[in-house]
Image (cartoon, rainbow, N blue to C red; front, side, top):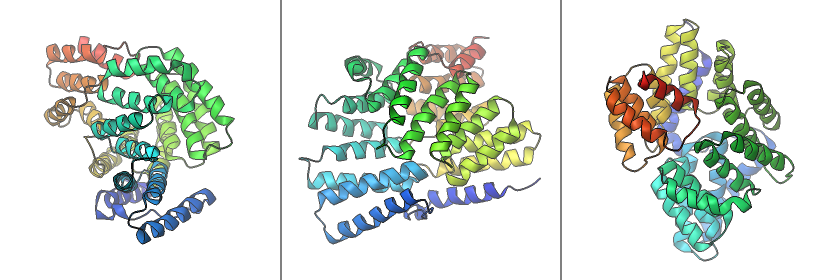
Length: 387
């Protein structure tokens, strides 16, 4: 059994990010845009240190930390962005509405949905009637399973569907409510519009490619998915999100070695738990149980380094491998107390099924299918429970 150098590096990174060293800034990668961003961070760090009451400088630095966190997956940056945004708002609320947006995004990245909703509501109160602010609040309502409130907001935003910040949220709502074709049209139009925007950073443009490719992949349109994801990599080479999605694509095709290769490239940049799990399954399919076990362990380490509620990819991985089922069921039920979305009910249903409690599992699965969502995962779980 070989020990992958990618695994060693990624596991070390996960261990560092789970401890006190998570508050150290990641190294400059040498890309001009990254160097410029990090220079801006250094500049505003000095300004903030010199001015204890500067709300604007703290808001700007918070936004820069948020940007770097999105690009590197470093939860330390999300926590720094949150702290600075809160301090900026404590110093000044007037003419500081955008900082509520930064705070909301930083909390969302940490899966702290209830707090994120409070920040998003504060933003809509500061600037009422702004479609992109309403879309952000509606997105959080989806995460929390507050579908009535989300429906009302999305219905009011349809005229603003060409706004990029609105279109992607509307697409998610369309997909959740079983209108996959509408979701596809909205995302493809958003990608076309984004490609025509010279002001969009490469990281954001790559994200639009990811959304189009991810939807296609989930619904079995593998050629379309491959085109969108590779086009995204051409925009932003080395993007860990696109590499992880390409790993999922190759796994869907049964090309396990390619899945491992893309997955290892992704986790070399960011130790994403779901990608560790995918590589573990790929090695199991290749007959290398030792490597599969190593990556399963690395997945657990990566999960331990992330804040917020239990990682759902980890929960599904454990259930699919018939491991720690009572523990996963308890955690999933605990999460439903504040986050009662359809995927939370799906997780509870799947855990109950694994405990051979299919009568209870069917009741939870009814809640998971309540919106008419056309999701292969939900359909597969419902079919297994139904049998």
